[in-house]
Image (cartoon, rainbow, N blue to C red; front, side, top):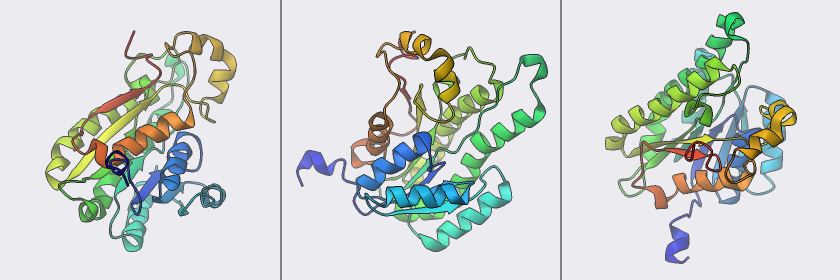
Length: 259
C-alpha cells in the first residue's frame, strides 16, 4: 500500500454507528464497511437493524443491534453488551438523533426533553461508558476516534421552529470541544461533523416543500451526497486526521461558512 493510501487505511478496525440504519448514519456506515471496518449499526427498531445489516453485509462486515439510546438505562445496557462483544472499539460515531418542530408559543416540554435526551445526553454517556474499549484501541500515533454528528442548525439560526433541535446541535458542538480537551491525554480524539441538507427521511418533507429555495442559497448549489459524509467520516477516522481534535467541520456546501 502506498504512503498516501495508508493514511486512509481503516482495514481491521471496529466501529459503532448509532442511528446507523438510515440517513446520514447509514451513509457513514456504508462507507466504513466498504473501507474494511467491522461496523455495528444501532437503531431503536430491531427490524431496521436487521435490514440495514443485511444490506451493508454485501460490502463487508456489519452487525445490527437495537437499543433505544434516548433511554439512559438502555444506553448502559447497550454499552455493557458492546464491551462484552468488542474489547477494542476504534471509532464511535454518535449520530442517533431526533427533531421536533412547533410554534414558539406551543412548543411542548416533551419535544424539548426527547430531543435533548437523545441528541446530547446519550452522546455523553455512551462515550463515557464505551471509553474503556476506546482506550484499549488507542495509540499515541493513531488515537481512537469519536465523531459526533451535529448540524448547521447548531451553527446558524434556522428559519424553522425546531428550537430544541438547534439548541441540541449547538450543545453537541461544544460538548465535542469539551470532551476533546479532556480525552486527548487518553489518546481519544473527538471531532464533529455539522451537515447541511442531505436527502434523508428527516429532511424529506422540508426538501419537498422548499428544496429549490434551500439549494439556491447553498454556494455549491446542491444537497449533500453519501460520498460527502462518508468521505469526511473516513478522514476523521483515519491516520490522516491523527493531529485533529475538537474540530467541528461544516459539511454544508459553504452555506454556514460564507454567509
